[in-house]
Length: 116
Image (cartoon, rainbow, N blue to C red; front, side, top):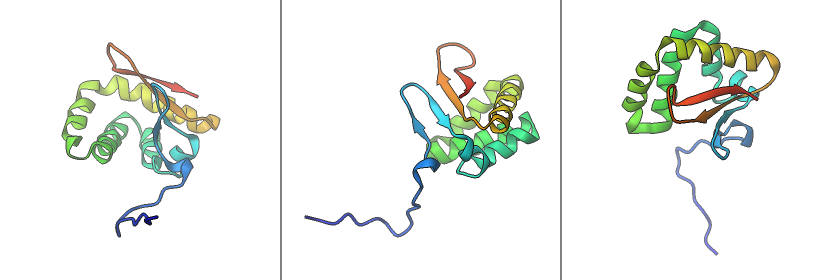
C-alpha cells in the first residue's frame, strides 16, 4: 500500500473551518464568521457594505483563483443594496450564534442569503 504524501506548502483545515456546498447552498458557520477562515467577511460586514464588497472580491479571488476577476466583476454588478442586505444578515447571524447560507437561484440577485 502506498502512502499519500502531501505537498510542502499545503494548509491543513479543521472540519469546522471548511467551506462546503451542502446540496444547493454555500454555508458559513458562526465560528467561521467570528474566528475561522471567513472571519474577514464577518469583520467587513460589521464595517458596512463597501467593506463587505471588498471582502467579497477577496473571497472570490481566493476560491476561484484565476477566475477572481470574474468574481470582482460580479461584485460590482451585485451593487450596494445587495451588500447592505448581506452585511445586515451576516452581522445578524454573528449576533444570534448562527451561520449564513447562500442559496443560488435564477433571477437577481443570483442567490438568497438566509440566517440558519
